[in-house]
Amino acid sequence: MTNRDEMIHTAISARLQRVRERITETCIHCGRAPGTVRLVAVSKTMPIDVVRSAIQSGAEILGENYIQEAREKCRELSDTPVSWHFIGHLQTNKAKYAVKLFDLIHTVDSVHLAAELDREARKIGKIQQILIQVNVGNELSKSGVAPELARRLICDIADYANISVQGLMAIPPFFDAPEKVRPYFRQLRKLRDSLQDAKSLGPHLAELSMGMTGDFEAAIEEGATLVRIGTAIFGERP
Ligand SMILES: *Cc1c(COP(=O)(O)O)cnc(C)c1O
Image (tube, rainbow, N blue to C red; front, side, top):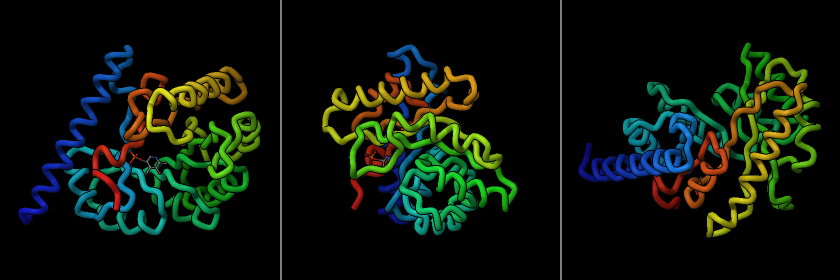
């Protein structure tokens, strides 16, 4: 390692540890077991050596947004035991790669995409775990199924044998104050709870993927089981 590599490694280690401490402190503060919140280290745009540093510092799940970038990283880092999650917008024609690379796909928002993932997963004999992305702010610019259509979507894909819906994910509207985002986290949790109550959908909706660098503590207080954190671990993206 060069001096510069060492500095980067030290910085990432320290930041990752601090994020872990904040997750633990928040869990204790709101009466949750720290093990119920998993950290997805969002490594999009970060070079391989930086991502490797995060893994060596204990990151267990990496979140990526772009298929092409993820393919390269997975190849380069195939010697590591890390789990890869897809958190970006997934085009149907990339479903094949997504199924090969990712343990969990957070961003399924249409029957069409689910059908394609099911088809590709069947080809390689996999049950692909997915989350349903919900557009909690009803923003025109954002992906995700409208909250009132989430139940219909989950029912429509319930028969696909090679995908398994594990829960919900949201990217709420942007605010620089976590308290302004909190109502959206609460909304996602309530939606999840109401879907869980519908027996026909089964008990498979345990996961709530919500909370990023600016607001993950509020998300945990509102029930997040997966927080997606980039900047607080890797620094500002270029
Ligand atoms: C980039 C990204 C994140 C991480 O955001 P930070 O603010 O850097 O923590 C989380 N979720 C999604 C979907 C992202 O695209």
